[in-house]
Amino acid sequence: MTIPPALCFGPWRRLLSLIACVFILSACQTTTPSAPSEKSTVARSGQARSADGAMIHYTDSGSGDAAIVLIHGWSCDERYWRKQIPELANQYRVVTLDLAGHGQSGLRDDYPITAFAQDVAAVVERLQLKQVALVGHSMGGPVALESARLLPHRVAGVVAVDSFHTGFPWPQDEAGMTPFLTQFDKDFHGAAQKMVRDMFGIGADPELIEWVVGDMSQAPKTVGMSAMRHLFQWHRDPATAFDAVAAPIAHINAKGRFGQTPPLSLRNNEEIFWIEGVGHFVPMEAPQRFSETLEMILQGWKFPRRVN
Image (cartoon, rainbow, N blue to C red; front, top):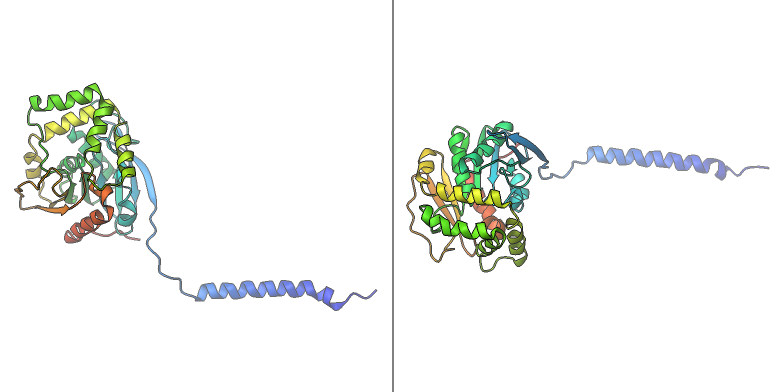
């Protein structure tokens, strides 16, 4: 019986054709230039040991020896910067952290602002950062200033977000603090919910409001009460910290949140930027406008961009 030539050579022809296709495709891939792509950003999590031994969780995005360090506020954590990280990390090395008693970080017995500053300094030291821009929201503003006092030769500047020059009537003595703290001591969850809800602007996203209100009101009472008391005490004499920081200080504030813009008395190294139509959570309520303002500040400081 004679086997038709087509049956004998068919399989070989198909194999040769396949080899030829692979060769041609390989040649195309090596000779065609690839399209430019954005810088890839890999986020790495780690821990640093603060001065008192508390373990501080951080997330590091990007590379280089200069970084933006984002510091959250009272009863928050690093997730509150999530709307800024993708855009910022494409241009800069970005580090977020959970202060002690918050998020994934460890606990301590007491929560003064100066101890939170040690948390920031520990992360900066752990990552061997040579230059930092400290960005703090709310309570994070005082923490950033105190951190700058610990890292005077590494701080390119401090950005305080709705922390100062807001018109908020900080109590100046124990008698002024007591009524405020008492309501939190009696019903921390309920008092936190009411306070946080009132912090948002009129047009804020309802889903954002409910998430933030629910999240912050679930913070540990012992941590929240201690941090709040120390924050009030710190605000009795903020000038000491301001006077100790030679680096530029920029403020990004919600305009007229307490009815009208307060009269300003700025030092030579201070400047202020207003964002209208938002409440206290400026980075979350107006992420694009906030990021654009922060970028303008960083460019003015000639802050180094990240390396590939």
